[in-house]
Length: 140
Ligand code: ATP
Ligand code: MG
Image (cartoon, rainbow, N blue to C red; front, top):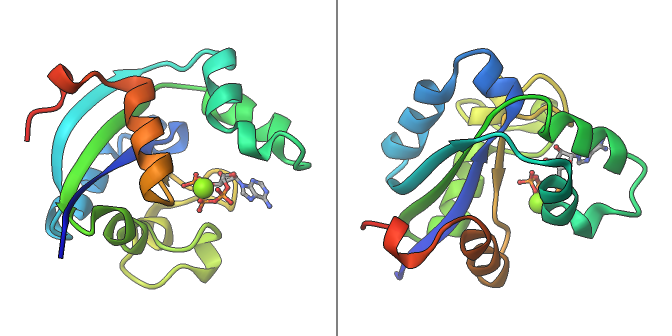
């Protein structure tokens, strides 16, 4: 097994409901370590660029509006197989399909307002981490 890093966002529906600590506890209980963290309010340009792969999807405008509707917490998580592990801890995109005990099953409000983002592959993890953090910000 490989020690890996992944990128995470605690989304505005979760910061609004003061769930930051409960969500970080899920990462930590699931074996991941927070090695960088910052609370920011994304600009429209940042959100459009971050979710650029979904530009042609019907929900793109709604997704960008949501991501800039309040503060988010951007984080780097580290652990064994962190990319896949984080996606297990988050649960399925649609909270009604997410396994019991996952972040989305417990906290998400809908398929759009689903409390967390997690990188889906090593290349996107690298790009997303580099977009928000420099090496000096990450302390393992
Ligand atoms: P994320 O990339 O945020 O970790 P994901 O990888 O589980 O989520 P994606 O397919 O990449 O899911 O979708 C990105 C985000 O777009 C979702 O997390 C959700 O906020 C939003 N989204 C996806 N599908 C829909 C939909 N059908 N309607 C509204 N919003 C959606
Ligand atoms: Mg995704």
